[in-house]
Image (cartoon, rainbow, N blue to C red):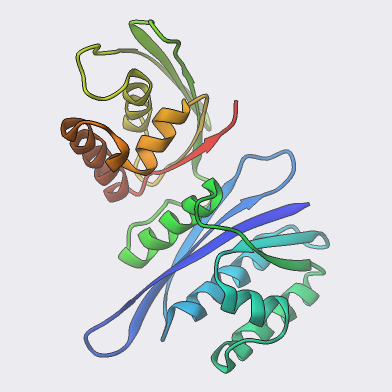
Length: 244
């Protein structure tokens, strides 16, 4: 079964028009998650959301089933049930026509934004709307973080097409940022602009602090984490966490 996690972002411009961004994470058996994003002119957020579903159908393997996960009820009603706002009817019909043409058996279901792939799709959509590219589709690196409590350093290995980078990262025991999060920040620092990082073995603490720096107990740690996130966003770097 193939799965796509989709989201959109939208902003109204001063002249009354709107600019939107869509993002999706496509998961197919035996492959790492692939990330895609795009910007579009859109009169509202819901149409941008439907566009994300359309792109998922177009990018999914033909002749196979595809489950699309979204947190937008209007999209579920329009694409998944043939109902919903009249404004979405034409766009929803385009989705179904493309699915039929590519022999994709489409299923649209609800998923909360708190799921990790939904968070990635949300970040991709926001970046696309702002004009921050995520790089060409499929440009990604596989990251392995090796660290145990009490170790003075962490080993970070980054593998991309034709290249492997390994770094031994000294950990500062006096830092307000937890050691596991220090290792994660070092891994993100090895990314190239527009690259998607698929991170393995990041601790739950590191993942939580990356997603929400305000969870850090100390203000100094929050500041460091926010700055790292801002640098990554400006460079179009996306971070996805996988279970080890």
